[in-house]
Image (cartoon, rainbow, N blue to C red):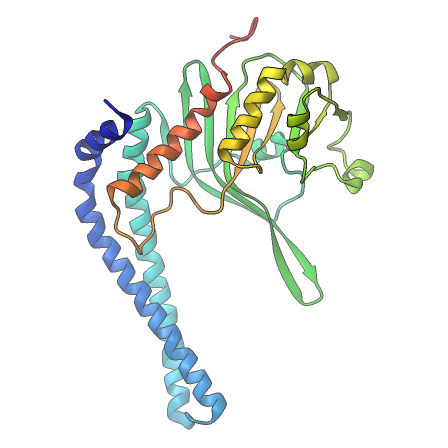
Length: 317
């Protein structure tokens, strides 16, 4: 049976029964979103009217106050219903899709990768002001334990009276057991975004003991800049065949994908332009859209196969 036919059969058996009830709730959320848009447009019209002198008088002030109050109330109603819809959608649809991949995987829609793991990875060394995420998936594929979630980190820059938010990372953060024993720290950062700038090198404690690693792969070194606390172990980890696999994964997920190898684990950050598992209220849930979730989850879990992490080396149990 082809993968498409298999998904269609599983969709009909496990998922399609949830769609009618979810569609009714989606329509309610969309109605409130349209009402909010209507109030916003009305507010703009009134403000323009007052600015041009077309709409004046005390009755307009009352109308403006009424619009503000209505907008605030509408926002809270909309947000409450959207949250409830997203929660039910994830419980029924995303959970079911994960079951299609492997029912043994755990799924916690409101949880995320622990900040301690993010820091341990060393993939992004800039301090953050915002750390949020969701859709934590944990499991075991073969003999390899893994976990991943969506994650967003950012920091604020104050320039005079202006505050700007700068995104550090937005995407999927993936952690898995590595198939070789090692005790060093090795970082394969993007060649276009190395994390050891001049300031970090001079004043940061993170870089203690790190040295740049030169590897014999021009294609790899076009993509990555590597630092490690152990030159020998870094080459043990980054064998020629493994570097080829990392390049292939970048081709699959995008040039922004970066890796680190710390205390027997591999950390991977995969930037994405959108939140991958959030439902939209402007489109009905259908088989095609849900298959995208399935394909995305399969691609993420197959990272373990792509890197051959189930092939244990020497005494790695």
